[in-house]
Structure formats: structure tokens, C-alpha cells
Image (cartoon, rainbow, N blue to C red; front, side):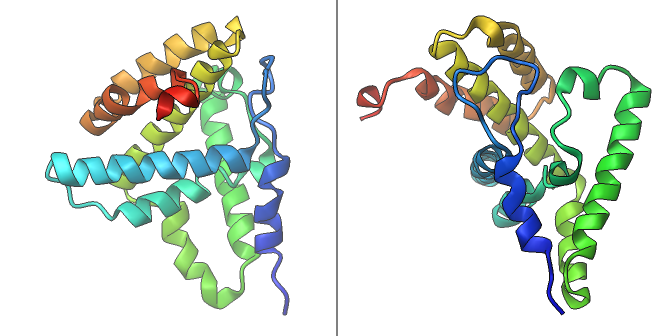
Length: 190
């Protein structure tokens, strides 16, 4: 029996993000997910090395790789709509859950149990992935602003505030040590 799971995963590159905003450079779901996985892994390593944590950084990275795959089915719901009120937020969470179950069902039956923890990680993993997702959004805002696109100015401020409100020391440390580099040119990164 053939499985369509990975063919569906490959469609992530067709899902455009930031649909309500003018972009100087489009970003697709595949690009975003890889960046979130890099950042989530870094946050886990920082937690373990600098804050006495004991989280599996690789499991965090894998959870980040799959964190938005439901959007293959649902599309990218813009944040202002997704979080407009509690009712919309709760219904959308339910829709995401149904989409994730649909994706898992595309796997051969003997592999499905291995994907359930990826789609339903523990709270520690979820918090690191959420922080990484927000940091990725902040990076997009910085890149757009650096390209002269003022459309992302208020999104940058609100995203930075949202990251700070997470109260995660590893996220604060990532911002302190890494975020300024995203405003540099290639020559300045040497």
C-alpha cells in the first residue's frame, strides 16, 4: 500500500505566509519551518547548557519541523484573524487538530504511533517551539524592515513584546546574542 504522507509534506513549499501584508520577499511554509527548527534546537541547547535544562534538543527540532504542517490542509490563517477572539482561536485549534489527524492517517499504520508525540509534544517542547515560531516571525519583520518595507514595523513591535511575555530566559538570551546579526549585510557577518 502506498502512503501519501511525504507527498503532502512536500506541498509545504506551496503555502505562502504573511498573506495580509505586502512582502518584499515571499516566505513559504517550508522556509519558515526550517528556520523554526533551527531556532527551537538552539533554544533547547541554550536551556540545557545555560539554565540546567534536560530537554532533548533533537526532539524539539523535529516537533518544530512539523509544528505548522496542518497548514498544508488549512492554509496559513493570518494571526490577526486566528487570534481575533477566543471563539475563533478555539475553533481554529480544533481545525488544526483535525488536519494533523488527517496527515497522520496518511502514514502506514505501523508508523503512526511514532508521529503522535511529534504532533502532541509535552509542554516543555511546545513552549520552546512556540518561542522559536515567534522569533522566526520577528526575523521576517526585521528582514522586511531592512528591505525598506515599513509594513512590518508594528508587527515587529508586537512580536517582540509577545516573545518577552513568554518569560523564557533562553528566548531572551537568543535575542540578546543572535537577533542583531539579522540586520547585518553578508559582508558584515564575517
